[in-house]
Length: 289
Image (cartoon, rainbow, N blue to C red; front, side, top):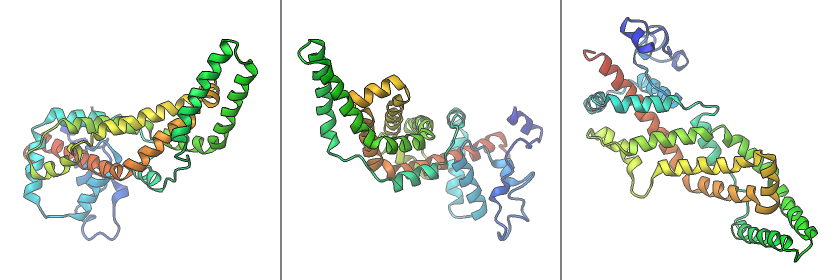
């Protein structure tokens, strides 16, 4: 309905971009870059906050370098309406409680607190739990021994419980962002581009052996697994017999250590394509512009 209104010249439903105004800018006010019925309001079809911010930055910069190369890129994207609409629709499903910048900063500042020795101790403990259960069921050991083992596991889990909860609460806000961004990246991984600018930015998603969509989705799965501790019954079993919190945190902390640098780049490139798709969409609707 919003786009149909635009055909009649009604852009009132679109963001006017007032927050991107720079008071000391040399020409933004005179040219109505932002505000009611502004250039930004007419052009902006971005689906993410980062894409919108990048588009606003471009308008504020008024960079005239590589204009022809950018026009070639937009012309190519204009001829791919299905790709544009798919990307826009998927990006619109991202409901954010935390910004991409905040996620990246959190990862960058993150300090691992699970000692790596637990990578070896958790499987050993799990085998001990299995043995204790089997022996207790067979009547070889008293049930009191199994209870002692369970309480021993709970006591280990309790050492890290508060810090694990803090991580879970922080990353739970970003959990579905990782899922949806993995789908956006998967979409881009399957595309081919000819324009030099697009090929340059698209190369990030097609680096050999990177499979960034899979890696983001894997983090989503790790966070889902950690979220099982919200179930009280599973939380007790997981804490006492599986060291579930420690097991999942080892995976999450390894992921953060290995992928943080890539996350910042991926967020930037997703914003780039969001902004370019938005400009190409305007070019498609207004072919004579």
